[in-house]
Image 1 (cartoon, one colour):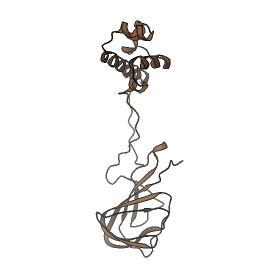
Image 2 (cartoon, rainbow, N blue to C red; image 1 turned 90 degrees about the horizontal axis):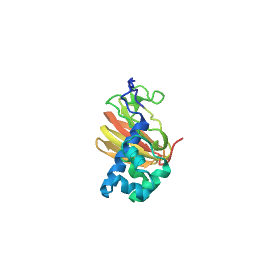
Image 3 (tube, rainbow, N blue to C red; image 1 turned 135 degrees about the horizontal axis):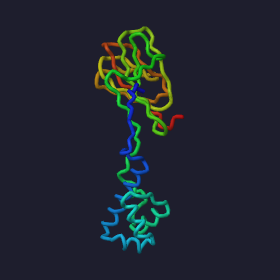
Length: 208
């Protein structure tokens, strides 16, 4: 992963907490669902058995309703529970890598051979590994690789001979190749340099 600069955020009394954000979103969505049916607060209170005062506090973001209250409101308004949370900001795992700033894998990189990891998400979404490979020098013997999952290669520049299992392919800029990662594979000969390609390993399962 890329090294990220640390940013310090000063939290003031004006910065809303997550709980306040939830209350605001719930209130906004409840008001929208109610007005769609042209119901007044009094009418909704009568239907749900929830006091008008409580409904007013919810709509104005002054309190967080219990789960049972949300269920009663959802049933009365014929809406899914998730409707009350529309618009709530969610944490998304995003990696942004500037050109030339991929994380260098030192153990795999050698003189004239550079392997840069372009991203690796966390948790249950960690099912692929994108990498930028740059080969600047010829070598007599290239290592062969084997791994679980599927690999996809897209040639960015140069020309090389690439082997997969018992087959050989000539790859030029714009060419792509997809294969089973369990088969022995790797560059066999660099024809036109620099050779640069993007390799994406897709594991198809959750990595632990």
